[in-house]
Length: 433
Image (cartoon, rainbow, N blue to C red; front, side, top):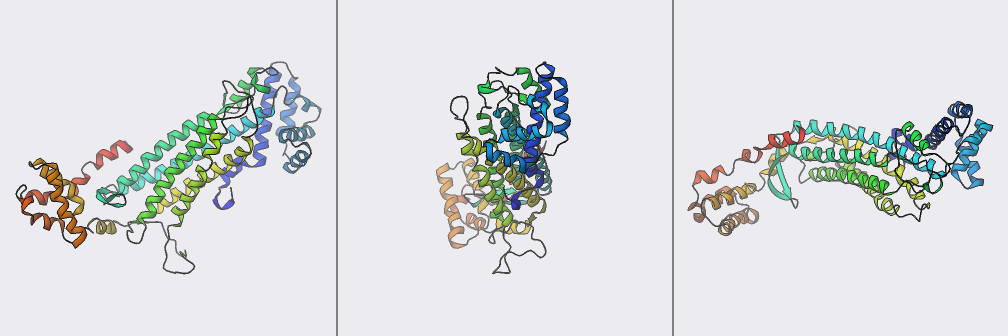
C-alpha cells in the first residue's frame, strides 16, 4: 500500500485513527447494551460515549503503551481509560480482543467494499457508453491471437460489461459474507457476556451477528471475500490485456489516451506505450497475491490462534486499496480510449477475405458436399492466401471443384460482412436490457 497506487478515500478506512475510532464504537455500543441489561451503570455508558466520543485518540500514545504491553487492544483500552477516567473499568466487560479486532476488520472490509461497488458502477457506466458508441464498429475477432471472424468493437466492450456486472454481484455477496459481528467472549461461549450485547453491537455497526464464533469469526468468510477480489482483479487484467494487444504497432485498433506533454520513453521520443494497462496487469497480480494466504487463514488451531492476524493486517488494506485504484484507473482508460475504425477495417481485410472461410465451408456442405471434402476445398484455397498473398474470393471462383457445387453468386454472397453482425442487437438486448 504505497501512495503511488492509493486513493485517500480508501486508505482513510485503514488508517490507525479510523481503526481506533471503530474500536471505540464497538466498545461503547457494547457498554450501551450492558447498561440496558443492568450489568453496568447507565451513567457509566453515557460517560464513556461523552468522553470517548469527543476524543482524538493519540496514536503515538497507544503505540507507546503497546511497546510495553506487547498487546494492541490492551494498549488502546489503557489509553481510553486515560481519557474516560474511572468509568473505563466498565469497558470490555466479558469481551475478548478478537471481539474487537474481528468486528472492526469486518466493518473496514464492508466500508472498503462499498467504495469498490461505487467504483464498479462508474466502470460499468463507462463500458456501456463506449459499447453503445461502437456497437456497429466492425472489427476482426481473434482466436489464438489469429484472425477468426468479424465482430464489432461494441460487442467486445459488451462482453467486458457483462463480466464486470457479474463481478459486481460477486462483490455484493462478498460484502454480505464478511458483514458479521462477534461479541461472544473467550472461546465464543458468551459465558461472561449476554448474546444480546452482540446483537446490539451488530445492529449498531451495520452488521449481522455471527451464528457461531470460536472466539474468532470463521475465516472461510474472509477466504471467500479475498477470492472474490482476486476474480475482479483477473477481470481487470483480461480487459487491460485486450487493450494492450490492440495497441500494438502492428495492430493499432485502439490506444490509451496520450496526453499533450506526455513522454513514452527516455530514449525514443516516438514511443506511445500502454503504460496504464500494463500497470493494471501488475496491480491485478498484487490483489490475487492475497488469495492463497486468505485460504490458508481458514485453518486456525482449535478455537483461536493469531496466525491469521499478521496476514490480514497486510492483505486487508493492500488488496482493497490496490483494487480501488485499479478500478478507477481502468474506468479512466475506457473513458478516454482512442478507437481507430479505419485500422480495424484495414486489419480485417489484410488477408483478403479469409475471414469468410466458414461461410463457404457451410455453403458447400449444404449444397451436398461432404464436410471433409468441403473443408479440403476451402482450406486449399485459404492456404494460397496465407502463402502466396492471393485473394480468397478470386481463388474460390477459379476452383473448378468449388464451382461445380456453388454458383458465382452463391460464393460472392458469402463475403457479406453484414452477415456477421446481424445478431448484435440481440446481444446488446441481453447485456443491457
